[in-house]
Image (cartoon, rainbow, N blue to C red; front, side, top):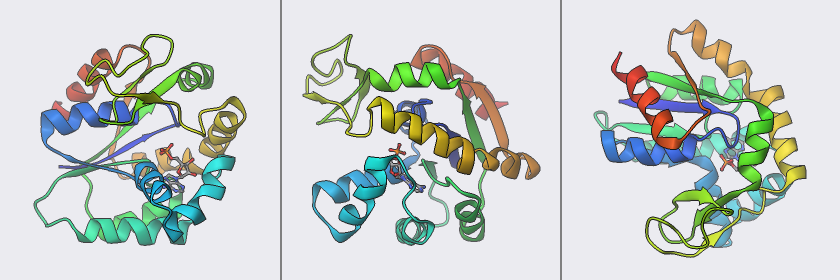
Length: 204
Ligand code: AMP
């Protein structure tokens, strides 16, 4: 199965990807994670991406498409995956369409103010990548690892990322609806409740 997880930053795509990976055995391809990994290792790609990420802007299409193209080259015909954070523009979606056939696009719907609240409390585990809330935990509840807050989870950058979502990514809703691939879910609630909705959509 090949899926796209679509939704604003903070809509819960990454959290649900962890569940889906476990339940459905799908590989998790997160373009944001690939950029952060490159940044940590000081690669030219990471250094190039950082200026956009810090501002809450999109990394240019050519850069992202080259990176995703190389990642997809590593997958054989029968291997399933879910893309988290890609595509984010119509040009990226057209590129993807030329590369692979999708089985579905899950749209995580939640309003902006709920997202701001979520992201300003978001903490990520350095060891296992688990996503949790800084107000509820001081260590990772799953593995005991150290929690950190992402540099771009500050209010100014979050608001900018939401603006970019509405201006550049939201058009993908119609793009995928027209192709009959869109499955919409309400992304407000507890992670387990949302996962039940995701499974319901995938299995219906
Ligand atoms: P994310 O972890 O998905 O929230 O992505 C973090 C940041 O990485 C974004 O705010 C962008 O600067 C950059 N990024 C990730 N995926 C893409 C993409 N598909 N197109 C352009 N920029 C991206």
